Image 1 (tube, rainbow, N blue to C red):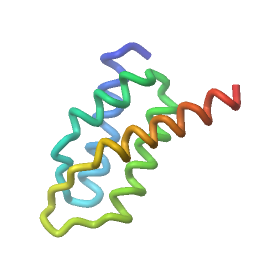
Image 2: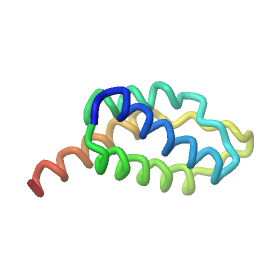
Image 3: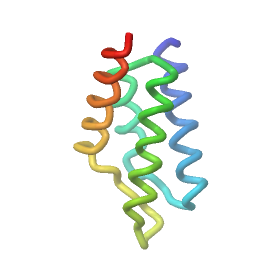
Image 4: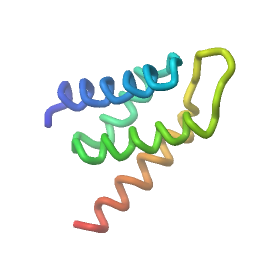
Length: 88
């Protein structure tokens, strides 16, 4: 998967999260950049996005807008990418 495809995949998964919870992720482009800077692997992108979905579910916001802390994003990326490397 190339960079553009990876960004499209991450964007589609974040869009799904937004639609599911009827929210807007205000820093979605920053999240997409962080993910695709570390991996272009479709399975890792899915796993990271699934983890972000869980984070959103566990941290409801009343405003309809959510800013996912980059510390959370980066830690998920780090853990998932390291875990995937260990299984190879």
